[in-house]
Picture 1 (cartoon, protein in one colour):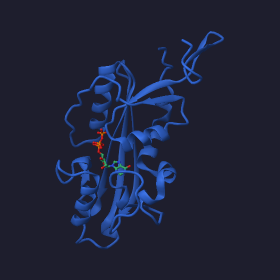
Picture 2 (cartoon, protein in one colour):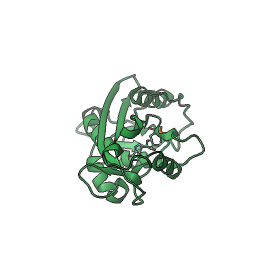
Picture 3 (cartoon, helix red, strand yellow):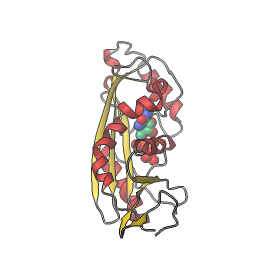
Picture 4 (cartoon, helix red, strand yellow):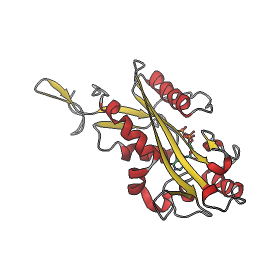
Length: 219
Ligand code: ITT
């Protein structure tokens, strides 16, 4: 204890004070940035897996909750630490709710974010009416502790799919997603607005009490 810099844990009148820490169980840099900004106001430090031994993640299935828990559990068990995972996706009305939990794999393994966006716009070409282009982002976050502790929260953000890409902030489907009540795409609105209204922001707000319970790290 001590010598950890101003934000590290310290003994204050015999009581351990400071910040708990949680590892972000994600390989998606866009998500990681949002984890950090969304949790900036809490007394918990969000760490990446970059300097950790590689973690083997289970194959993802078709349920947000099971996927999120599996990712967090893999990291919590491998590192003996608290871990936070997010499983999310875009549900499009005209596609019967697809791609949903399969959003990261939409269009097959050869595509990147912009390839998947092009593919989505192509699939919606026959659905020009705003109503058919209704959509929502869904996010389920799972917090798993080293002793098997577990908390889960879900958030949604309603909107519609635009006719073409707009803006260059955010990641994934943000350039073609217009949140309800806003004029621009999520990629035009930028991180400050996104962090107020997003599916991830809502899920994290619900998870905040559990995150606040993470004990102060002692090493
Ligand atoms: P990890 O599993 O390593 O966290 P991933 O990108 O594979 O990363 P998911 O399986 O949860 O994560 O896939 C979610 C996909 O849904 C993601 O790749 C995006 O394409 C999309 N998505 C989720 N949240 C989004 C957001 O806030 N903005 C835009 N697209 C988003």
